[in-house]
Length: 347
Length: 166
Image 1 (spheres, each protein chain N blue to C red):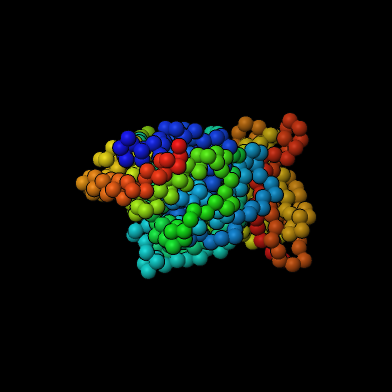
Image 2 (cartoon, helix red, strand yellow):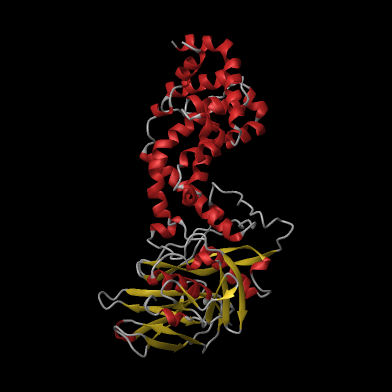
């Protein structure tokens, strides 16, 4: 027997290996999903490392079957260092810190929009946004949105219509319109529902911020006029109302997340709920309900109507709280279609 | 590419390839625990890049990644790796297979990491020389001479190993 044959015999053949077990596969996917999310986020964030310690969520009320909150990659064990992109070295990139806050991320669930909130903050490449805290915050959250959802979202059935590889290029603001510039991948693949859904995800995520009522889409540095094979018109700024077909049954337009609300402020939005009855309440920092009342939308039970309610409350010091808007189920009287917005309550 | 689709496509690759990559890494490093880490890291890299490589044969790419990881680990831990392989803290489910792999690793420890990789890709993975050249990013003639020199190096100690396993 030649040395070569002996060597072969000693080493054995890879064909002889048994297959891995299902348990090993399950264990692998658990860690791989964390790595994948980090990689997507890292791609989106360029050379920016995610800040740690923010992966907890506090959602008192979420819509039925809404996704579990996103777990940002900071908690992922398999992923200490995002890979730097060649174009973004540490010397070139000016990093801007966006404070940690609870914000909404909008995803698709079936053919409807759905949302979860996450407590998250971090640093972004300063060139991604104009010199304005609102655009900078929007850039952080939109980057996370285009980077895709996490395991927790996917297990809850949330998906994203935004194609993989989409990058956020820039966020600016003109008046109450957020200008969101995305890479061309955003317009690739998918039918018209998918196009509508991905636009809606960006518009809903973008319009949660204070002073933002609409989103103007740009693609690859150009003011986009239409996207997709069927040419969805994006020539004008888009609002939450442009996507009523996809919207959950209650959408609050004001106040925005993190906004300071005072006695006699209005809560406004649109809804399609049973008998047009919309419940509104405020919960203070201790979880005590300090205001609860209902209002009637201009239409209901199968049609969309606008609602508006004046808030009446008093607190003995300024504090964080939540504004909750929901309806009672016609079927069993349970609270349903709930929206819960973190706000500051003014003294 | 959605994660669910990625999982569905990747699962079969994982089930077939994970044990092979683990054994390859064990024979490369002589350290079962490190081999487990390295093969896992290699699979994660393949998984996160799956959308780009799935249309080609992902096997060679996985080998390229794994060999590069093993070589980096070797560079970082050269002194440590030069010692006898460590067994502590590792519970193999197929102890005899792992022992075999460690015996191979010990036999190949006289070779440089790249020649060890050439030998293993040739005789364990049964890869043609041309493909080994592509996986390792080295010219074909270098691979041929690597193989020849590796066999020359192993020949004297080799007979002993074969007798031992009989």
